[in-house]
Image (cartoon, rainbow, N blue to C red; front, top):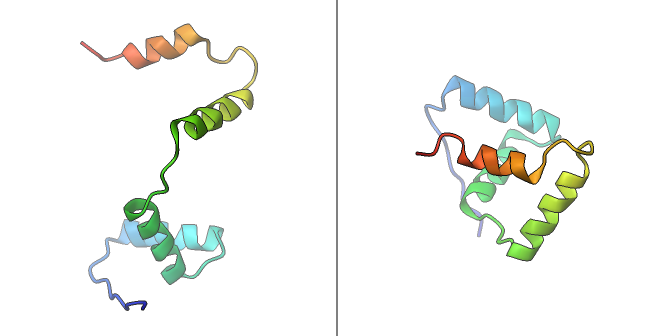
Length: 81
């Protein structure tokens, strides 16, 4: 059974961001807040195979030669002792 929740003292920046994303997604503030809470508290489990497939698909959308394997390895090492 759904429960009602009242939020108080929401920081102005958080409220503004919630309002903006609600408008962009054509949702009410309430619906957007629920979507945000679900995304953080009930994240969908993604298998390693699916995660790799998504990464490859994303990488395929980049212009050719944007990142080499060496570039990625260097970025991962950057800032590490």
